[in-house]
Amino acid sequence: MHLAQLRLRDFRNYARLDAEFAPGCHLLLGDNAQGKTNILEAIYLLATLRSFRGVGGAPMVRHGQPGYFVGGTVVGTGTHEVKLYWSARERQFTLDGQPVRRLTDYLGTLRVTVFCAEDVHLVKGTARHRRRFMDLLLSQTRPGYLPLLQRYLRAVRARNALLRQPVLDQAALDSFTAELVRLGNELMACRRALLPELTAAAAGAYARIARGGETLRLVYQPSVREDFAVELACARPREVHRGVTLVGPHLDELQLLLDGQPAAQFGSEGQKRCIALALKVAQAELLTRAHAAPPVLLIDDVMGELDAKRRSAFVPLLEQVHQNRGQVLMTTTEEKWPGELAGTAQRWIVRAGTLTPVARP
Image (cartoon, rainbow, N blue to C red; front, top):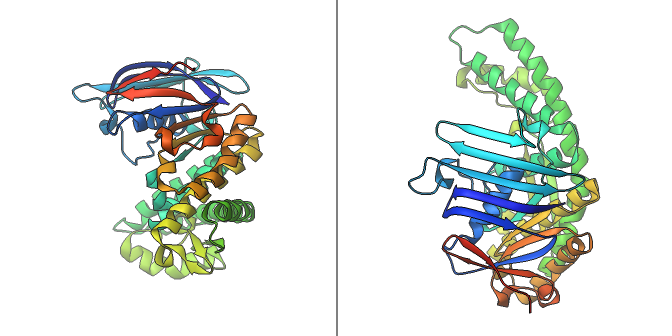
């Protein structure tokens, strides 16, 4: 799979961009604040309909313009045209000329894994970041997981609305509680099934990247300890008082342990960055196994945060992508690029919202 063409209109600092990308490695070179990361953000947006910077649509619109357009040609088992327009008043999203009504009909058209500075929130941030990481990975590797998650979250919202009513509708609440228990148990089963494979891949990646001798372990900690229905019943008085569902997989945690200690509290900043990188490497590896093809890798100056030995441990993943005719887009400088792959990369100069290919020698 690769992104063959990217088209931007009034996106961030790009008034207009039309670029074609072959499979292989692409280096986006330029000074800070020129628009390198914006290109990766646009590609991630095409894949997930989200910005990896955690912002909504408005900040991605070029200053003074009403909206932005992002389009692309994706080549995988087939060729697909994706078009996305956003403004405060209008949203348009099409796949091969047809409106996309449900995310489940689209997700997987373009699969990506992004490596960026924000990844450290997987270690230092709240449990929500780690749940989202698990949910995105499961949505891209387990058919049926995304609609299951969507139904569960709708049930949580409906149940919360009932809990906030002045007069409690007991029958309706019992009905949504039963639905919550059924869907929640399925979600937890999927997350438990993911953990052995995810833990093995992340621990292996951490050992290659950190080379410090310490061991990374992932522990799934569901909000439900034993019986979901019983625990909801016990929590009912507190839920009515607070107007919110207090037990369930929407509150689950994925604990990251380094030699048995919580990494967020006891890990150094360097170790935290290595753990975040290992999680993303594991994500890419699991996506590759699930689909027999690597995702597009978007790497936003991660090499600058790693010393030479740790950077070299990252190279096997890039080589795997290269061997499978996958695609890597990386923002970096020449000095930070692993020498083993420098000769195969297509270089681009990014300057003030323009993208110019550098002719190969």
